[in-house]
Length: 101
Image 1: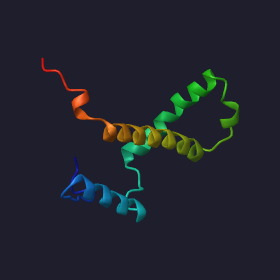
Image 2: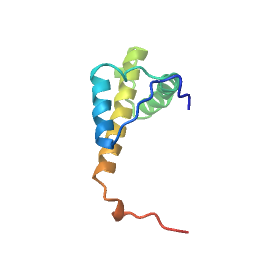
Image 3: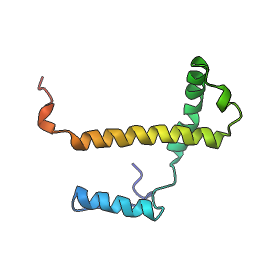
């Protein structure tokens, strides 16, 4: 972790953390991708193209810009993460205890 490179905030609870995150998003405080995120999106273009070719869906995407393809990838990643967060929030931790070995 490079703590000095990015803003660092502490919150008293998850509710306050969620509220702080919402404020940051509304004020454009969390919109810039890190170099790692930008690279991951760029590197995801090829696997996306391979699946589109395999499913014979490449034609509609053939003349799209890299920025448009990146938006598609970001939408998929964002949707996936949002679903995982919702599922985790809804889950009762006692329903799926971690077994001891």
